[in-house]
Length: 225
Image (cartoon, rainbow, N blue to C red; front, side):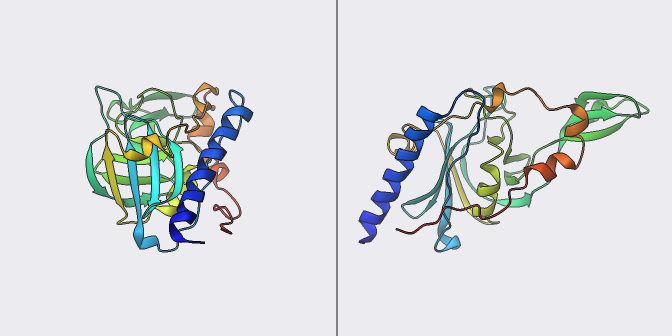
């Protein structure tokens, strides 16, 4: 198959999967996005469309992963510009927001406001990939509106795939929009995870929270085209 036709077929499959997902996924049920192993990891790059709240992981013109994201609020916007991935941490915790913990209480709060007699435990931000100091991609609820402090949240089932595709040094471009918004991102699936009840605070401060997010087996689809 010619290279151009191959990429067109990949684009078609992404669109088909998005359409199938929209028809078969009920509110609050399982969400995922297919990912494909790159032929040359050095050619992988990431595009983030703020207008479409979408992430496109590309190898040249071939989409490897297309998924929804939650972006920064108006008062704490996601930075625009060109960056490179660094500081990849599968078990990252927030240095700013989390919980004040003692033997009998777990209270949400900021690190700089930790009361005497309590210890601070940061909110979990699994599969962290930093692109600017204090800003990164990480697993979390993907609201349909800007909701973060500037980071880019990815659904918990998709974040391990993004983490596997994006190495230290991978180029990242964040813009208001991209041409892909009208093609592979036109009917992108949107998760409903933000409607799920919040996990117990005791669970969020535990290592088990990270353990349970680890995906077993191959993260990538079998690319037989």
